[in-house]
Image: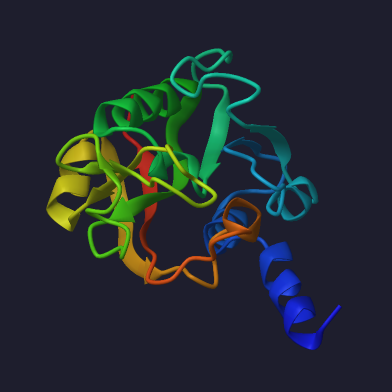
Length: 195
């Protein structure tokens, strides 16, 4: 293994910055739902102090989660809410709200219209495009301005919304053949509104 590939692997073994935020702001022993577990890079950090259920789309449909209402103290989604149309994402957000306790912390990423991939590929709608080649060929991605994302998150209390260049943060497992170049995500820290 080369020095640069070892350094790259180390980057992607670290938990996502939003996972670290969730760890810092959630009490030990809390129940956490990770939506879109991916390579599992966040699991080791979370399970050290939390009760974690991690799912991916091969396990369950994110818009019909098999959990009782108000089951979780926190929710993490570092990539699942980048995919699908705005209507798909809104349906997942409704499920997140349903399965979360009042005032639960939600840490999630969303696509930004500053992302170099916005407007490229097959146009699904005004916010949504699917790449025609690469690792995510055919996978719909949606992108938002701050105003559009705030409208989508209208039922949540927004604590922090920040645009971040993520070429060195996003999971390498999803972009092994075509590494990201110019990728920008919204990092959102939210609270579930009182129920």
